[in-house]
Length: 137
Image (cartoon, rainbow, N blue to C red):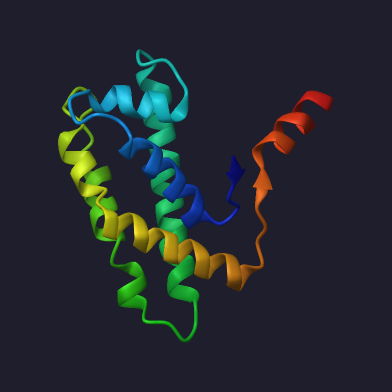
């Protein structure tokens, strides 16, 4: 798996993984699986969600800084993502959250990721390479 170094790409990867979970599970279960942490570790789940929200705002800021694009068009997918994060109930059903992560939202993030990676000259990092480096350290 390649890890994207632009914020839109990282956000998109996490949200796409969240989308794979059934609507019938709790929000807690979804985020714990995405972050690979224990479902009972509420503090860690909330910290990771907070980090994702920061990535969301960082992505929006970078999109707003781009020249010669239709900012309204590129920022459109963020409305659903903001709704997703504004309704966090870890013990609620994932159904509403999953529906907010529809195809247009994900495609919009993919376009943002593509544009940011071209503008900022960021590179893709292979996850296996990261693990190899961590083992050597």
